[in-house]
Image 1 (spheres, one colour):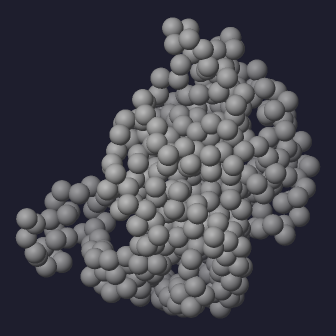
Image 2 (spheres, one colour; image 1 turned 120 degrees about the vertical axis):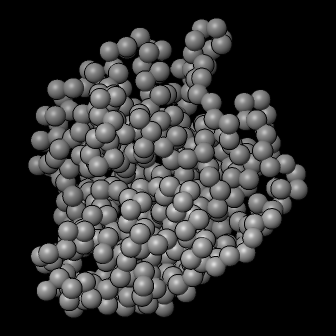
Image 3 (cartoon, one colour; image 1 turned 60 degrees about the vertical axis):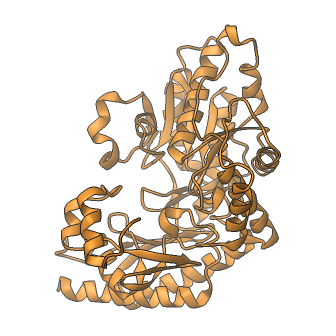
Length: 445
């Protein structure tokens, strides 16, 4: 039995043993981690009181914390079985989920895994092996976009363009070309959103030089999350998809963050009306209740691997928790809830209100520029600070003390709350954000 203890003791025990992800552990000497006792809706209930989860706990809590429909589905599955091997079995729920995912994504086949990085790695391996099966062994390279991020396995780091993650492992990289002329936009009303002719002409020159060496293009459709919520032209994505198809190069859509209504569409790729060959999903797939990811795959690719086992066409990627039963039930409940509550529409309305509030903060503080948004994502860059070397981190700590969990990316501040968040909570978040920026500005003088 774990003994009861006070928060200070618990924090010290945690820091003695728990190495936190994507953190500098020394920072916790000045700013201890939150102790979370309960989470419901858009709030975490902590040792510091209620905290608005403005980032959906790393972008996954699409339906908020503790949705009873998802919890009930998981509990129901626990009375049957919690996990069985995925290589030799099937069941009614995984079949139903695969059918739903095929309908949503337009790809007939689904390969299940556990997390986003694994899903992207699976898609990369499928593309590489498909090229080998077709006798195109020279097609062993990838194309991605500048500022891209696709995960933190060695393979996914190789196709990511954020050096703060990949630099220590650069010697182990696969060969990836990063397209430099990405036409960034501030939203769907930006002229570049629907027409990016000049940027595409420059990109086409890049593409034509390397097309014979490439098996796949990887993109975060429309929004590059870890780069700072950078939004780019739907016309650019549509042109890229068309070019890939004409040149027999697979298109991999990394929808780990953008999938399941976050951008106001079921998939961000739908903004460009394209059909990627492989689509990677996770995070919002289970509304963050259980680890689960998948790759949906075109029938054309599937048929390449369909043969006698001895012919070396089998895709020998395994994952112990592939198609985990609890994750499958959570995903089914998530999709059913999203459909019944028209979450796509709610995402669009929430995003419009978020942008309105964000713009007001920028006007009143003169500390935010380059506001961009799509669906229920809004971001802007902190400016006009002179002496604070870690602006985003300092703002995070101030906001936390006032009741909101923000996690700025560099000098980019963003909101990405649960899609079920009400306007009253956004009003509170806006007030906290504005007060925090003003307080940081006072320190900076």
